Length: 148
Image (cartoon, rainbow, N blue to C red):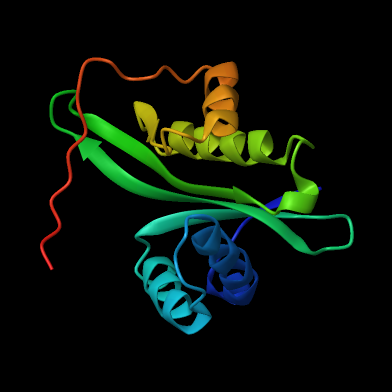
């Protein structure tokens, strides 16, 4: 298993995984749309992405991180926004390694914490996050407003 911090050179590997991730979250398969979005994120340095490669050098998982800030904490925050491992490679510690890559990135960029969110019914992800040491928030509620 090899974890690589990718650039636009590995965009096609990311698109393959990202499309599967979006389908997992009940979104349509749309590789061209996702390719454009991901290319912009990587080209503009809006995101940092790590891909896990199998021993056969096949992409099997990814984690996508956004760099943000916390005014209250007066510091940088890494937002672990997307994490996905293909089904055939789950339960092998890949997600854990990808998360550790995000934590290392946070430390190297001087971030004060790593934030993430997951679906309320994604119990396996919740268990993994809590096992690693993430603490479920209870102090703040999360709200969203669609503006389109």
